[in-house]
Image 1: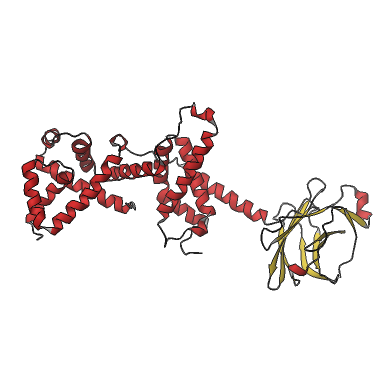
Image 2: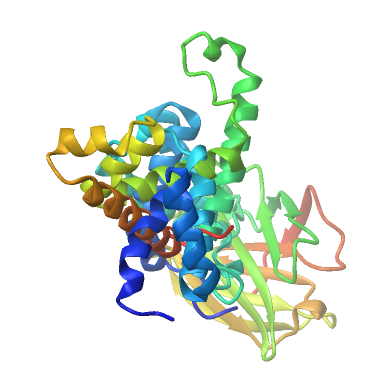
Length: 169
Length: 235
């Protein structure tokens, strides 16, 4: 058994406190339903515990492993739901977005949440809303050069956060 | 050529990577990049981050929903329950015909319904007695060990305080003691015993519970669905 294997309940508790928020946040985004997301996260940790001996930190991070399990859980939930068409009428249609695409999107959104408000703000205004720097600067009451440097430090912060999150391209 | 002079260029690299610099400013920056490997590397690195931006939805930059506080406890409870169930499963359910009828106690011959199960699931061997009076269960899981056989006994539903003696019978018909235990009502009635007889050679598992004797054939022995055993004295 590799050292670091997830075999006792304390390991699972630690894994839960480190990664449940991310897994849950993503599950909500991916499944579009809080109840299903809870189910998915619960099933993910149960499966992780059952297969705990197979987790080897030499091969990949715990986070990557948990997301891989969640991926299977989400697929299984999607299948289960497909076989219960009545549920689809309730408005909790599964996200049709493929899992990996959804995971990529969610990671970048999560990174955006983690950078500073000022950095996120200028990236939203200049990049996502396509507004001129001068206009954004005036609205914020800062020189245009400050908007520009915030854009630079914002992208750098995003890069650091993505690395911290274990983003692998 | 990393100097303080780079700082002003650096702070334009974000807008540059986003494609936001106008023609003249971009041309000046690119001229600097031509001569500055460090700024060029930084521009490329930021460029890689920029390629990710279209995947995100700015409507979703608000706080992510947090998992409900009780979810962690619920998961811990599920895991605890599953661990206990797993342990329980290791104990076999062996039913004893502890005959609900008092008269049966006097009978020297007991009818036993025997069924071995879970064959081939590993080196362990499970023994199950079926067709029991309601509420009575006795089981065993046998594990081959270097010293012989480890026996996990599981008992439920017999009179509290009953002394149980366990034996294994070998191919010659001689019995080897595996030890004794006392069933206590309400307690964890699992007992781990050991017998100096290889599981592969064992032919029967014998349990004397109070004044009753129960025999389950093992291994190569024919499975008896309704066989009669003479009550025997332990050797």
